Image 1 (cartoon, rainbow, N blue to C red):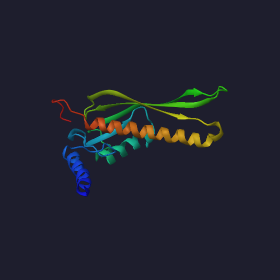
Image 2: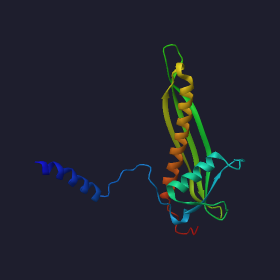
Image 3: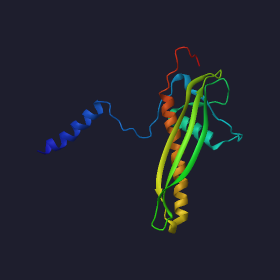
Image 4: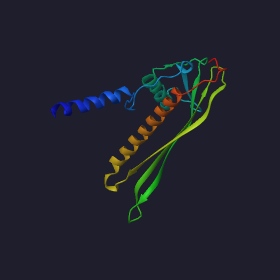
Length: 174
């Protein structure tokens, strides 16, 4: 009886590991060779150290092991149209807002070394809702800022995962 109690979980673990199952988590991804060295640009930004560009570059380095270059002779990830807005989701009995919906939207495209479009423009949309307590305003403002940071991080990680699935056209030699 004791042997079956020990053997059954061990057998289940071996079967699960043998089938290739692994938790999804925040693991690393592998970019295709054509995007192993990439440049990141934020369209319309005049800031030298744009926070969105820096966050995307960090995401590419950390989760994809990519080399981020500043040279214009490499493929370019162009980030455009970042938009964060808040909308009242629910109201209480006195007509005051008690819940909000945060919406985050970012568009991006991938250009080749010569400026040709490797991937058509795509848009990611994420949203989160949260409760608002008028008696705890400072904490709720902090919670909203944290949610905005999480939305940005999640969207940038999704872009990295999408880049990992990128398949260059047969004629592209970038």
